[in-house]
Image 1 (cartoon, helix red, strand yellow):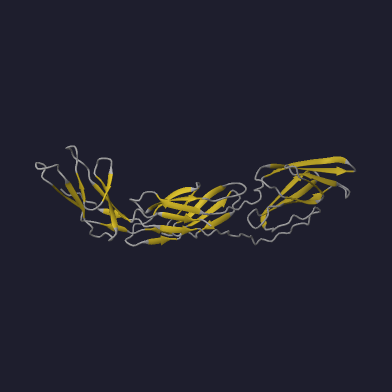
Image 2 (tube, one colour; image 1 turned 90 degrees about the vertical axis):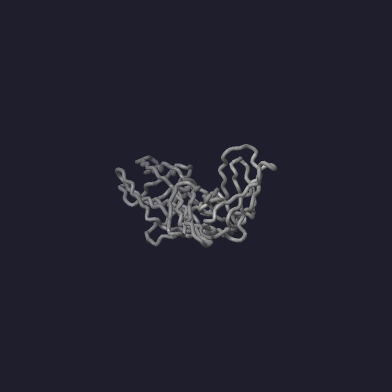
Length: 315
């Protein structure tokens, strides 16, 4: 009797050392920004080109937002650009998060991602002349993600199938997309931090420097590709399983199974499923079946299984 095991897979231990990196982003568009009357907010400023105009009755003001992506701070600049009010008019601003300012040119920095109502009140000689409101949706500060991921084998019988878990952090907002470049000629894009990938079956060990790019709600990105994923070679064995058995009339019948090692690495290990719900190791393997019936016999060939499949050394 002969049971053929056509595909044998191997696994080998490997280590991943995380080197954390931050990709800095800057836009090149140039835009004039009025100097506000208030104290300048410190930090890097990168124009996002995101400008809106709000008009009502006697005035128009311009709202310009800078980029929220590291290293920039997201700052809103509000400037009166057209008005029919006299020169002694006062402009008082309420930004919807408790912040206020006074002047023709003001600035404000929202800490958190939310929708806020901006209110502009115009006074002339202490009397309210006009009230204008509009809504803004800032992305908040620290909206750039910090990308990193870990991975592990899903099943030692199929070492080409690897599970990945993005462990990306963000201070404000959320991650909306994870883009993966598997370095095997394929890519994928998912909304969840967990994903799986089936690498090609090759007859040689292969290392893949997989790159993951996380994108936040604000469109800010960070990538991580300092992790090398090891995928062991796949071996094909055509020798199959053979067995011999002792004379059941003389003593308890003992069956010895032998898995051919043709095409397999010298230090391959053999795990047997004899259809009884218990796994056994060895090659050859001798076993006594208690009951008379048909048993499906399968031999799994693995490569240094008891060594650590994955060691992570996060920095």
